Image (tube, rainbow, N blue to C red):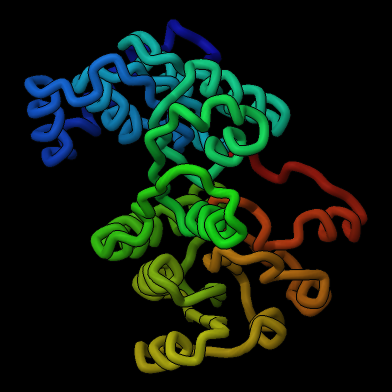
Length: 314
């Protein structure tokens, strides 16, 4: 981790989160009595922030040995990582890791020989199946919380390469309703506003995809006073968006009118070079999802005349 001295600050954050997670608190109390994971190693790859820390504490209360890394280079909170390490967890995460460091941290987690995996994007399981195959014989299973990760696991299942059972937490109906629609819907807009310091009201916000996350983003953008355009290839979902009052059009048309674009499909190449040339000057491009593959950032960098940091990501 980056700085163990930040632990006290992180403990305050975790205390705040714990106070707002009563159900997990009840589970933790039960785990303390039953010890269902006594001596079991659990590997975790998740957004390492205060709510995840409470989840980690819950597994520890049940007797588990926790090894955790972050699933995104910019979502790890260094003070929370320090506090979680102080509680006895094995933490391999810091804000701003490079892709190479991230991969090394995944392997460090797997060095604790987990028998259960809590995954975000399927990254630990992919590493187990490709680089740490010796762990397969002892694996009990995994759970996955993202649409992107479930897609990866299903692809592995289809080609016969998945060697242990996986619970698709992402497919739980309550996950759709609460986490995807309301949680991610709010946090995606918060991310745009914190990064840009822009007023949303009056802007045209283009939402790529009208799944649970997409409809949550659209709803909150509308509530903030934006004009919302939805792009959606599924005709039923597109019809839902129309009936909920949104403009619906292909991305090639939306590219001409949008001020802020947020993709939320879990698929590749939603915004590409085809669209960049159609966009207004100064548009904001954002992605709500595990991997940044929905916007063709590589081609955008290649086409750019210059690249600079306009505002630090705070």
